[in-house]
Length: 417
Image (cartoon, rainbow, N blue to C red; front, side, top):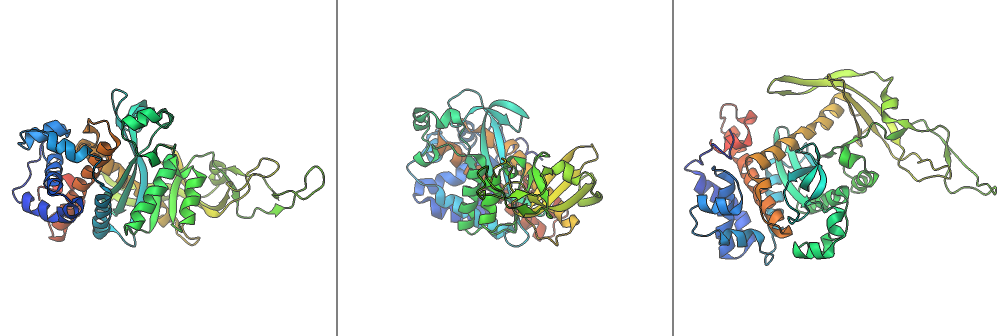
């Protein structure tokens, strides 16, 4: 059921939503914001077309859209406490041992050049380089229940190299310095952990996993992780030995020399045994592929005198061989005794964030915001995440009552329960 076009909100939603939003309303401060926040969430949950401010105000029966616009775009108040409440609510629903934190990004196609962060860059929704905004996202998931908990805009160089443009869009001073998506993700992970979010493992695609700084950042935080990599990622076998090296003058070199060269991830797994593993049952039946795994040392250590990356930490190298013939590769810091079945299930648990992105955009209007400011975009994203969290709350509540098909229902369908 598509919330954006067909769902009529049930009669009991007013009281139930108000109760659920109470912690958020306590964090908003002024009475006007306590009134506007529930209205904005109702506008996102309602049917009738685009979820931009003016159409929502009309559907809500407001005489003017100005109060909603002021609530969502005003830099006069700090919405950080609301992001913290969202993390606390999400943790209460699905956090703890067994939960995974999925790091990804989501592209929002945009016309024009004035919306904050918009530039020609790769947009996942379109599968090509296009005019778009890209947000780094965090999703906490347990089984088939994902909940978005963080969104932060990535600013391309066309913006960070233009202070005047950033000033006009209200970009905070701290965000005007160029930051990579992996760096943004690590900062967001620190934020949600400080808010009390608890999980067992961080998952990411190759856009993040191919960054040594991202992987090392997770290790420094003592977080278990599994992330995609390119097939060309260089690795060493765990039996690699390092021998001392000398400079041309005969002095000892700063870094040693490995006794064998590294090879690509694809080459390392080429002769390994691949086993077919089913990681979950989907709507069309069991989902499975062939997997192989081996312990390796990644070539992401210091550069030696021969311009060769030295072996880094020992990790799992995992390969996935799909029935289409496509192969995917992953690294993971999970313990050495982890079974291949668990490794496969872990790397495939990322699918839930794709479901979240689709519902946020198609059902809750993540991409419908028409303002141009940094504050407005992030606050709209916060409200869409809050609306999604409420839908999942109802879904879990329905499942707890033993509703038929509860655990398998979509978040959008749950609001009608």
